[in-house]
Amino acid sequence: MITVQSGDGGDGCVSFRREKYVPRGGPNGGDGGDGGNVIFNVSPRKRTLYDFHFKRHFKAEKGRHGQGKQKTGRKGKDLIIDIPAGTLILEAETGRLLADLVRPGDSFVAARGGRGGLGNTHYKSSTNRAPRAFKPGEPGCIVHLKLELKLIADVGLVGLPNAGKSTLIGAISSARPKTAAYPFTTLSPNLGVVHTGWGEPFVVADIPGLIEGAHSGAGLGIRFLRHIERTRILVHLIDVSAIDSCNPLQAYHTVNTELTLYSPALAGKPQIIALNKMDLEGSEKMAGIFSEALSAQDVLTISAVKRTGLKQLTSRVSTLLDELHESTQEKVS
Image (cartoon, rainbow, N blue to C red):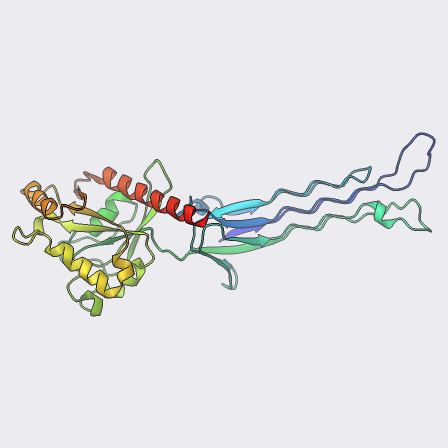
């Protein structure tokens, strides 16, 4: 939960003209400036709500008070809070949806600033030539909100059971999923935030391994394929030790076939292919056979257990996400 507070309006001013030979000048108090609004704005530079773990209170600037000579106080600056596309803004207490911001450039005014007060000029009348009345500025409003990201992850990990997806997400993020040397260790989606150290963090989702027939209910993967439908890219993890030298692309085609049968849009997402378990004996030979068979695409080699090749993988993911963001921004503009 976060709290946002708009700016208070500035007070109106009580002032009178002071001119030579005019000992009793009329009122000339200016109005106060309006307080700043709190505005949520979808930024293509943002991919997570991670920053809100550290800052939970946001306040816009107050309006300035009015001044003499009918000078209106300056309006308080609006507070613009950048959020990623797909963010839901809800009332914290009721859970009522206030806004669903899905495209770069979408914005929502969460709290409007208080209006500035009136100066004593407004209170002049035929019976009151020297009013000392003024109107104070209206206070800003305080709103408690909850932010949720509709996109559960930027990156979806896919692969056959025992490809090492849970080990990988544990190696590149703070997530600690259960791992074991048997199929379907993962019984629910695991999410991990990856910090590369040079860019915006990204979220990775690990789902149970897919087997042939998963699109129609076989295995456990069908229950969780929907969780990666909204991811931007896929990392296709393949166990290098399970590659068949006679049919090296079997595992690769099995997973992609299931993705296509479930959702062509999901299968059409950009993929980064990574051969895992490169620490095992004979892995270099099998990686060469696989790469030769899949000559049209670049293949990364990693060992999630030994944590080798992971920097190259996360760098490739981060770069691809940035490219997709820039492409989306260009289409919007």
